[in-house]
Image 1 (spheres, rainbow, N blue to C red):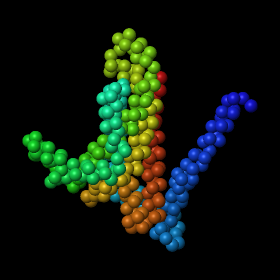
Image 2 (image 1 turned 90 degrees about the vertical axis):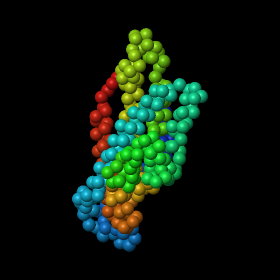
Image 3 (image 1 turned 135 degrees about the horizontal axis):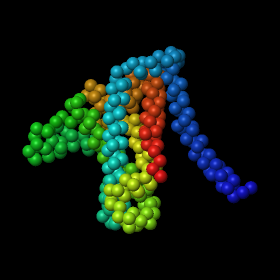
Amino acid sequence: MTAAVRARGFITVALFPAVLLFAFFVIVPVFWSAYYGFFDWKGIGAAKYIGFDNYAEVLQDQIFWLAFKNNMIVVAASVFGQVPIALLLALVLTKSTLFQRFVRASVFMPMVLSSVVIGIIWGYIYHPQIGILNFVLERTGLEHWKMQWLSDPKISMYSLTVPIIWNYIGPYMLMFIAALQNISPEIDDAARIDGVGPARKLISVKLPMIWDTVKVAVVLCISGSLKAFDLIYVMTGGGPAHSTELLASYMYNNTFNVFRFGYGSAVSTAIIVLSLVLIAGSQFLMKRDYR
């Protein structure tokens, strides 16, 4: 038996418990949820088989598509907000000076806070009477910009994207810093000798070499955005008038507030399908091989 075969056997045996747990706690519940989507079930008692009725109702429900549109706003804000800002911060904070380590920790800090705490903090920031945002606008002579940030259906969803972006920049920043630090210093030296400017070096050298990391970050952004729930639920509860309803909160309300477990299972299955479609589409658009 060769060393390579022994190494593969060891890796297989070592990974088997983790794969087994992942299958039991993630894969099996996904299919179990899809199965219950075919039933009218209140969570207790007998489940009545109704075929594709739940899935048909999901596709015909206007609130579901409103929640989907709101989720697309969150996805766009995450992909085009979190990723570029995190990459910019990673470029600035690549070195490990004391000040840069402090800034890194500060940027990462929101990630370790509870979403409930973050929701309460930003709820006070946006508060129309005592909120710091309207106070600053008033003190700087911009009273006409004061708004009901979370109560106005026209802007409430966009207001919520700010704390979402702020909350999750840290992990992507660390991913990009690790990827940039893995680039050989010789490549930077060669680019400098050739007279390549910072912008050109970023586009032609650094970005192609960390492109796989960028793709992973985009996948995480999309999947995380489509299951976003706790922060929105704390700040607005999906209101006013479903203007901040997301797919996860829509599923939660139908499952645990009105006890339609079968319909909630159909919604969760739809969320998974939409996630796979969006992730596959993003990977197709980003499949260009820069190397």
